Amino acid sequence: MDERFGAFLIAAPSSGSGKTTLTLGLLRLLATRGLAVQPFKCGPDYLDTRLHAMAASTGGRRRRGFNLDTFMAPAAHVRELFARQSAGADLAVVEGVMGLFDGAEKDRGSSAEIARLLGVPVVMVVDARSMAYSAAPLLHGFRTFDASLNLAGVIFNRVGSPSHYAFLEAAAHDAGVEPLGYVPRSDELAISERHLGLNTSADYDREGVIDRMAAHIAKTVDVGRLLEIAAIPRPAVPPPPPAPTSGERVIAVARDEAFSFLYEENLEVLRRFGRIEWFSPLEDRRLPEADLVCLAGGYPELYAERLSANVEMRRAVADYCRRGGCTWAECGGMMYLGGSITLRDGARHAMCGVLDLDTTMEEARLTLGYRSLELEGFGGGELCGHEFHYSKVSRSGALHSVATVRSARGEAVGTPVWREGNTFASYIHLYWGARPDFPEWLCGL
Image (cartoon, rainbow, N blue to C red):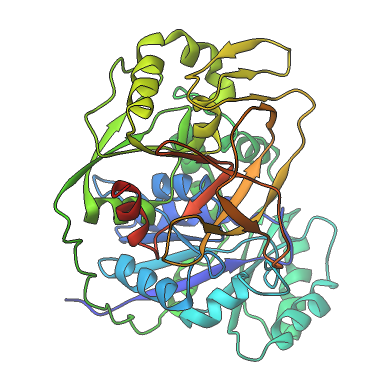
């Protein structure tokens, strides 16, 4: 096997600097040059990983995007996951989260922590719209703040002209950080980037947008030099974990435009545990025969009318749950199991009616943050995940929470984990990639 391998982490001083644009463009550019590129995302984001997978998949070669998160999983799991999923790749590209040192608490869970853990070089992307030589002290600070990090290069984004880049290039040299090129300012690219993750329509040309990003970046970024500084030893791959001994199970997993927020490593655990049967609450009329049903988060509010109109599926899901079938529902999946969803315009749409609650998008505000929880009856210890939603529960009946939930700082959080029979539901997107015993426990109820 060819042991040549490279990896780098794309970071930035802050959110909004252009990490995702650069990552997607580089993934597509490198993949079209014949490299097998494995994408990763720092943190709990489940949208960027889908876009990463699309950008890195070309010429019949399919890749999947994985999350690296040191709050939701132990360091040993993060290292093992990186090594295992990079084993068949020529290059691993990791997109950071927020600013380089921004974590759940100080730099815990930050891009910097993950770069240190994996031993990969960091490439900064700096938004240079209103900046010239001031980039020097900025880069000098990031280079010297943590001597254990290898800040190997910088790419400047939203650069106005070649002469503008000349100032930035000099600043980078004086700061001791190698300049690797720049991305010219493009209003068209900014518009495409803004809609790339927001437009959920299957007709939206994401492939075309990513191709344009790659072509834009290829003109002014020194990709050859980037690959040279990315060379690192290939990480050793540990032996695969043993398969569960409880026999093959069938896990029905919802996946369509309304339900798509899935952690790939969660799916890996389910595949080791049993056989996944995909189904669509939007399109299908029957629920697969299953030992466990997983209803992921997504955008049920955007498809509420169609979900409500599919009466056969709503009845099938309700019958399964009421017969005692094991179900795990997160965020949008929880909303689907409730009595109704009310949209911002006041329109109310009936859902499955399994849970005695209703949700609404009216006057809703963003709720987000890491969560750890202790679940009643689960003796395996703490479980971790992330909460991110705009909807809210407008009415809850006789349901009661079966978990103690805390924030990243260990403070009590009022987010419930409801249980009705063998149906569990919460706003929390749980990461069980490092807890393969969790779905087995659910199926054993």
